[in-house]
Amino acid sequence: MPPLNMTDTRKKSFAELPLAGPSGVYLAPSLLAADFANLGTQLQDAERAGAEVAHIDIMDGHFVPNLSMGPGIVEAIRPVSGMLFDVHLMISDPGRYVEAFAKAGADHITVHVESEGCLSAVIDRIHELGCSAGITLRPGTPVESLFPYLPMVEMALVMTVEPGFGGQSFMASQLPKVRALKDWAEANGRLLHIEVDGGIKAGNAADVAGAGANVLVAGSSIFNRKAAVSACVEAIREALRV
Image (cartoon, rainbow, N blue to C red; front, side, top):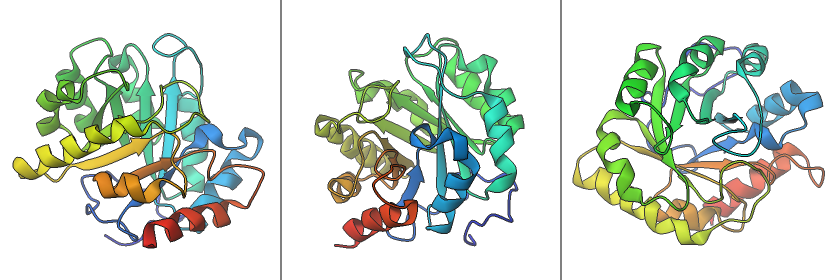
C-alpha cells in the first residue's frame, strides 16, 4: 500500500494495511490528548512526523464517565489529513452511531464487547458502511470474551488503562492479553491487527510490540507541551528500533 498522505482522504481500512508497519508497527496518535484549539494543526504535525493512524476516542458519559467528540469533529478534521481514522466507540449503544461516524469520515470503527446490542450485527453494519471493524474490552474483562468475534473483525484492541480518561499509567498486567490474541491469530491463520491503547510511551513501546501488538496508540506522550509532536513521534520510533 502506498504511504498515507494529506492529499489522499479516500476511505481506507485496516483490511488494506499489512501487519508490519514502517518500523514494525503503526503509530496512532490519540487525538484525545491533542490541543483542541489547534486540532487540525496537531493532526497534520503528527502525519508529517510519520504517524499513519489517527486514533479518535468517542465517549458518551454513560459507558464511561466522560464525554468527548462526536461525528461533527471527525467530519471537520477529515479534509486536513490522509491518515487512517481509527474511531474507538466507548459508548453504550454503538449500533446507533456507527453510520454517523462512517459518514463523517471514519475508516475503522472499534466497539466494546461489554456494550449493548447484537455485536455481530453491529460489526456487519460497520463493514456495510465501508469501514474495517474492531473489538475491544476493558482491563477487567477476560480476553476470551473477544474470541467469538475475532473471525468477524480486522482488529482487536487491548486497553492498558481504564477507558474514559487520558494520561493514565500503563498497565503491564494486560500484556498477556496481547500475547493470547497473537497466539489465536497464528493458530487460526488470521491476519489480525492487534492494537494497544493506554500509557504508551518510548519507555514501554518495545515491550508492547514484543508482546505482539502492531498498532500502538499514544496520547500524552505525543501531544504535550514538553516537546514538538515530531520529536515525540521520533522518540517512540527510535525506541522501537533498539
